[in-house]
Image (cartoon, each protein chain N blue to C red):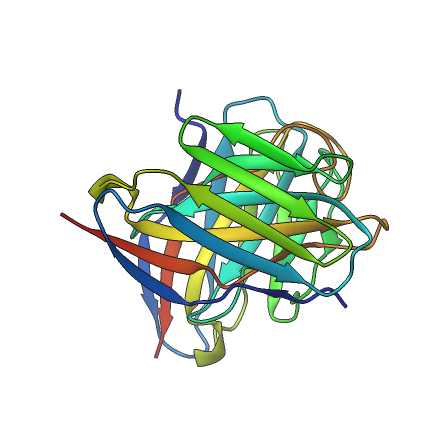
Length: 113
Length: 118
């Protein structure tokens, strides 16, 4: 069974600092990995999707890397802003038909002005 | 563009009561999903529907039933609510027809239904 862990559960940084969010998974036979943002009382918004054949994806200030062999993905957010305050979740898609999309519990980020 | 719409936003039930959570998407997506989110845990899949007329169990289906009414709508029913079903319920949709998203498109989520069972 795929286990997805995100540590730390919460993070507080001053505005302008770079954010590094970690996601680890136990089974390296994945199909893809997604990073989502969740604002309080809202649904999840997809930020980046990395296929298993890719090493990283970039979108604006966001960069996500994937290392399947070590079972890790990292989301980097450059020059953080108060508007980046949210919970960030990673989700891993397995390869087999019955394999569900496995979510981590998320890291809640607070960017202090 | 409304995306995925869930109703109601909030609901309080007494143990043993029944209710149906509604979900509709206007993106012409084939697959739809119901997840629950509990504090400190990742989202867990309850049921999914890869296409109109088909439904399958996910990780935590006990106590729930679903109906894929048409391509747009996917409802989740609690026949006899229990306190353990207190959670935030999310509906999601995806363009493809596979069990879980394999391609380049992400899942699209609704804003959730916050359910409390007392």
